[in-house]
Length: 207
Image (cartoon, rainbow, N blue to C red; front, top):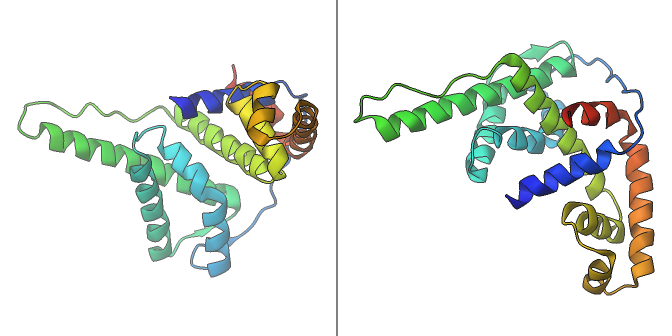
């Protein structure tokens, strides 16, 4: 799949950056019924959760619908969390279990007339944790890429995600090859600074 190849290229690219220490997020105490908190969590985690769900469900629309339903359920429940880490973990685990339920329901519908037992099995906790980490890291990388200037973003994506040569990129962007090189270099500098805290985790996922 093209998207998988692009994701792998991203991880390979950032795995070449120098290692740096990770930062710890400040503790927060909040409830999803708080409008500001809900909007912030939805903005921060909707796309990463959709990518996490895509590790289990194949259809993009199904992933989006499932994640949206999870956020709706969060509004209906009066849940409070000690900090953002606990809230984030709850969101991911809810999406995971809903994915498994969705798969089992579909399997049952497909084989309801046959004497076939359910074959969808829960993954080990370690596997789920890795998928959560992968989704969050990819989300942060893609967010950082989106924050680049248009020229830097296009040059970076077409080079490191699509595997195109500088000459081909220059022709598509209607600029000189030297301009493409400058865009790429500036993009790498900005991304290196913004994502330096992620290098250890990226390196771990590449093992």
